[in-house]
Image 1 (cartoon, one colour):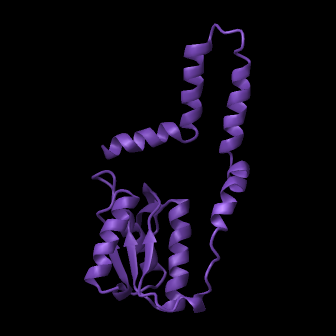
Image 2 (cartoon, helix red, strand yellow):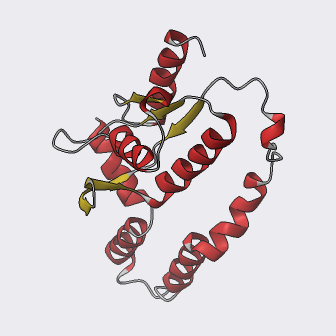
Image 3 (cartoon, helix red, strand yellow):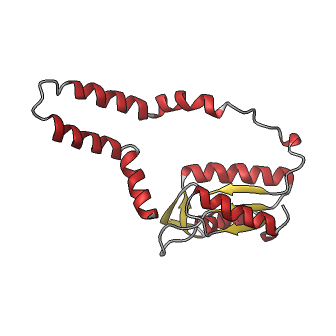
Length: 178
């Protein structure tokens, strides 16, 4: 089921959505007199999916809450870093596999918080396929290379999606009294 969901996402997110839209348009409108209108639709879809437009649309969501200052985070007991994808098999100087761009941004933010607060870090991210390393393991390797001690790192490596990240991380936090 998880594989089906991932394939569905691939077709619903760019560029898959463009390929699907073009295919459907061709099938349903190839004999239509108004086929030129499809160009407008594709242009609109394209504009709504590029970074410049997407950034403008998502900016209000990103600014919905004020970013707290480190000095305002008084009751925190742990830092949770959710993985956001990885690239398997990519050679690195101390192993194989790399975090995706979004995972790296999250990891760096977690590292900065750790250095400021000296709190343990729960690294949450499993694997989708059996023959790849877990995302938590990649994050762990990166943080170790940045000098974070083992005693501050806890891996949650069973999750395959955000719902499981939350479920399994909650279990770890309960077990460790965070």
